[in-house]
Image (cartoon, rainbow, N blue to C red; front, side, top):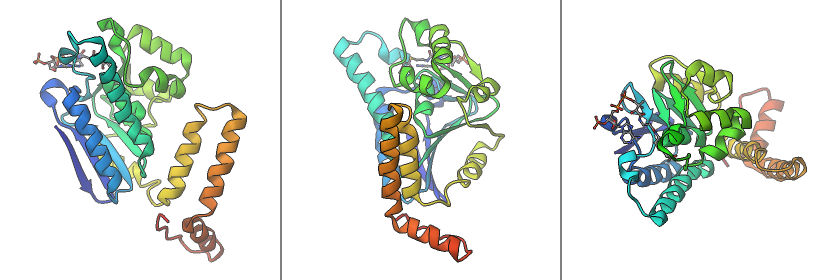
Length: 254
Ligand code: CAA
């Protein structure tokens, strides 16, 4: 089951299927989509995603459920997983994966789809699909190279090997390693940006994320468009006025 709690200024989404290391059945993926939408409608300033238990963030797609499916069902399953994780890009608030143990296959892909990633020291990342005769299907082949470069992504996808927290940090797969209690650490990390207006954060996220897809000159045009939109917000008016008046800005996400 997928749990969404509003906790202080955060929405916390927890994968709760510890007996199967939080593996993603299709039912669970659909629930994740519903909970992400719910987070989007809340007043939270960041979404934190994590897994129940100390062993796993998420061990990937439910392998038992993947067996003996028709090709059309398999394709629809991949498109569902991709679409649900892509919802994170359109959320009004940034998302943070708090990886507490195994993040394999679809679990690693869920973390990759979040805006930012934190690892507890026992985090283990991997895209082991080739060992099952498969390849990643929930966005991993596209998001991983954008994050760590094509060479490292090819190595991870072709070997299926496990990457620990230190290596994940050194290759840019995670932003930081944090200590337990992870949720408190994730909240402290999020507070480094949650005081900024959500409109500016949303425009900034979109501009930086488009850099991974676009040729430089098209990206620069997107940046000019989004920075002009940011300039038109009341938060921009307030932010610049607060600077001139030497006070802290009060952003209203308008
Ligand atoms: N699907 C279904 N069940 C899973 C699972 C998965 N991905 N991962 C773990 N489980 C279940 C196990 O079957 C086991 O259940 P039972 O007790 O009923 O047998 C339980 O969770 C505990 O797992 P293990 O006994 O295997 O735990 P372990 O500590 O020995 O090993 C592990 C942990 C190395 C993560 C191992 O469970 C493992 O390799 N899991 C599979 C990881 C994987 O291949 N993920 C990719 C899936 S495919 C995919 O995700 C495609 C895509 O791109 C969307």
